[in-house]
Image 1 (tube, one colour):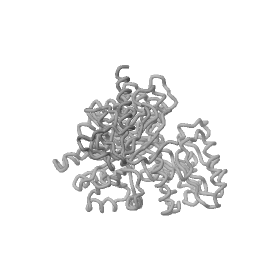
Image 2 (spheres, one colour):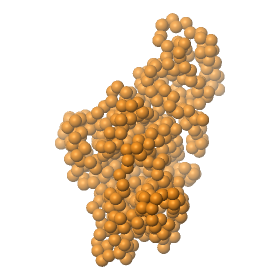
Image 3 (cartoon, helix red, strand yellow):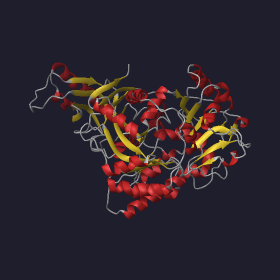
Image 4 (cartoon, helix red, strand yellow):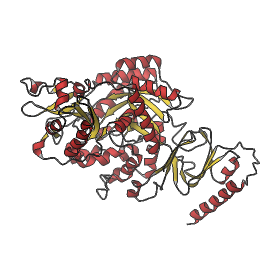
Length: 577
């Protein structure tokens, strides 16, 4: 109570100074552009964890503290009153797909679909509004979140018959929420030349690094797993430049609405990089992008190895210094690469979607050319195999780069023996806590209780071993909602608040750990902790302002909290209406 009274008194004193201009300016301090005060400000700086005021000049922070902020008041200084709200460093999406986010705004968004019938209704509506023959695309469905009778399921997935009946005149392709599988209707399969029934069907199911899911008679069900998706996607017309631009514009605005000021883009193509540059050059890149080059384009990687990383030290908007490798699939599509067979699909171990020799080769080349490697791995075998390749690359190149900060993206399911290896090798686990909320109810069917308890979503085990965790949402796999991922981090419950005590509660993050994973540790994961991720003098003036104090309110109230304002480079880019 005494502390609250002191804060109120200080607030009133600062207010008086602001209103009446009672600043002597004895130190001849240059006035700031903005003074932010009047609420709870968490700095994520252990030396000064909470402050009452922050002053910005241009795109940087010039003061962090209390009453002395009045010394920065000038005629042109703008005062932003928090009115009791809470401010943190600008949130950083530590693993997402920014163009996927934009296209989810443009195409059919299936993230909220609760059943197969609801999916069909949404697709049918889109088909009715399209021209005959026009491709219908979307993303976000997840069969494990639906109720389906056994007769409608083949190998855990729905079959295309009802979808094809509803959309006879349009080819349809709908990506799974994970992005690691897709669902096609009969028209799309006809265009792709995938046979409905043939003697060769049963032997054509396997595609290197993927699978066409077929029924017992050899008929394709419409499900294309992992790299088999290319059989369909190569027939979808190329996206226009105009549509790409619109998608990026929508993605940037979505980031602002969600309090996101930095974004680690996990796998950019040559075209996306060109688009990012165009936006930056014309002043429209309103997000700090940390870009990973897609490992699917080997020619692109070789070009960048010669050229070297591109680090933006001027505007700090566009940095390209990382390589993204996709090494296994997703747990939802049973594509994650496991050491032991799937509990709910005996004899199946998932997919190695990229040769491990290529991971080793890429790791060595990246070390020599100054690039970070970020490898997608969900299953325990994929994680182990990648850690093994990283370790060999480090041993073969001792002292080449002492601070490599190689990452494993997702690191969802680990063998207990591999958990301490992250810290030992200096490898960063980039984990999206919201996946635990979405996946844990059905993931136990895939892995069984023992594997879940010992090594799935083991945040505290990793943190206690000395690793730093980078948080995020993997958007558009999950909605771009940092509060959902923050809630999952500290509650380990579904977004409906179950179970009461949380799943494996000993693995919960503290709120301080969760906030660091979205700010300072996320910045560390991109070599940017010296310029952002905490509120300190000299760092970039990026802030997120919340309607409530997410560090103290009851858990479920976190999901009711709003983003009130987003400030990027000292400028207000979003205010909740």
